[in-house]
Length: 403
Ligand SMILES: Nc1ncnc2c1ncn2[C@@H]1O[C@H](COP(=O)(O)OP(=O)(O)OP(=O)(O)O)[C@@H](O)[C@H]1O
Image 1: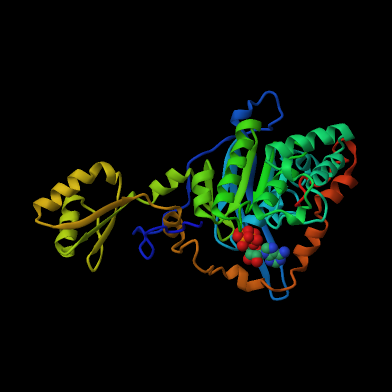
Image 2 (image 1 turned 180 degrees about the horizontal axis):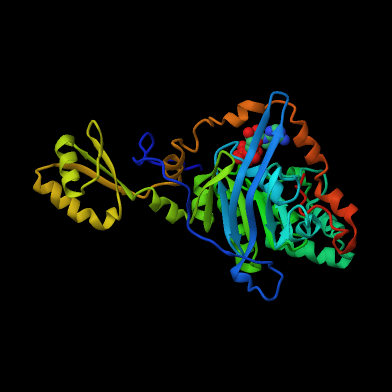
């Protein structure tokens, strides 16, 4: 279930938009350099990453100077509305699409200059999924493992262990197209892990899944980090997913990162908890609240009073005492934490589930984006890996669902 603005629709934390916020920086390092302890390493870094597409009527800047870092073992979420540039960024980081300008490193290697090395170190599970075939589940995994250069026995063992890890053992004889949405996403992820990548990109991993399947998939994602130490970057527009699954959230809008922090850090940046009071004396209550907490200006609608207050839980006794002394009779009091939608609203003036006003889209969407298509066609990971030769060759695209 999508919990955008849960429980408080129509009212948002007051206050002006805040500037982009960043809470964390990592040291840049190659993860497989023994001099660099993995726990300190940055495994993904983007510097001014930009990508535009040319259409018949103009240019669309899908990604506009993206700047961020992801540390080893982190689960980081790209949270943003439709068209924010999340997928385009993931396609660049996974080397399927060349940047127009800017640079990025993944697992210590440049995404343009060291494309082949990047490809063997990443897994990509794309948005659409790529495993809707007549083939059997077990065969898909075995074939993928063989394509990555494993012997028959190694491929058999790898498939067996992935089937077990993703609870697909009982389904190994089933045709892929007969799987449920959740089972299919589990297979998509398993396919992306056949070659044991250290960094995994998941594009909208739970889109379209029911709440139970979504929670189940989150457990699998957490296990990848906990059991295998993987670093995961996922895109989502589900607030709940960003909040509950991700260690850190990069809020994306208009092709750039507008905020970067843990869900708690981002929410506390909004300005505190949300207090809602119902009373038949809203005017008296609002004056009392402003006296008690200078600077706080409650939003008053009929018998409902709402305002943002830092550490409201611990200040509740003070609030109730003050209102009582002012002679205000309360019908109810509720304190809730701000949501990530409040964060997005504060940053952009828009709700995450609202319509995208993106002028970039008007400039070219629906047009024949020739430049983009040409780049994407030449960007198939499988083709490039086969063509590149050397120690990196023989490795197909990093996940079944690429491309
Ligand atoms: N190949 C292309 N040709 C033209 N425009 C494109 C192309 N790919 C993406 N765009 C445009 O770039 C912008 C960003 O798209 P992108 O898919 O990266 O956004 P997103 O944040 O992943 O959106 P969603 O959540 O809907 O998947 C959009 O305006 C989109 O229409």
